[in-house]
Image 1 (cartoon, rainbow, N blue to C red):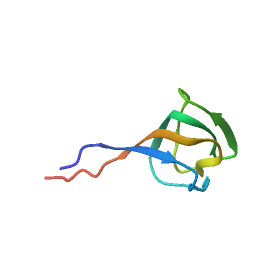
Image 2: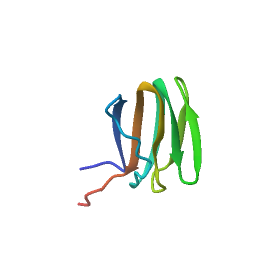
Image 3: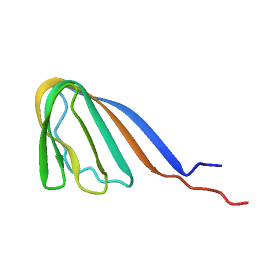
Image 4: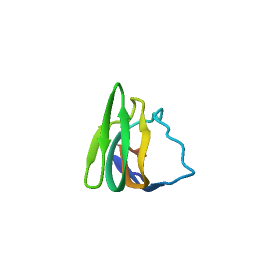
Length: 89
């Protein structure tokens, strides 16, 4: 049985071979926290210049992702939370 909330954590590393991509869309809410590097991160129509210690929390249905990679490697934690499926009995 799954609970009412599912959480998926990811540790993301962007390096010299990485391409910016700011069109991610998925269900749920997402929290990101930058550990190293600098990037311009897009959410919807807004962009944010993020560096170590910066965080964002947002609705993941809007287009989002790193739009520009300013200082590499860029390492950040991404935690996605969404409603899980409950099995009835």
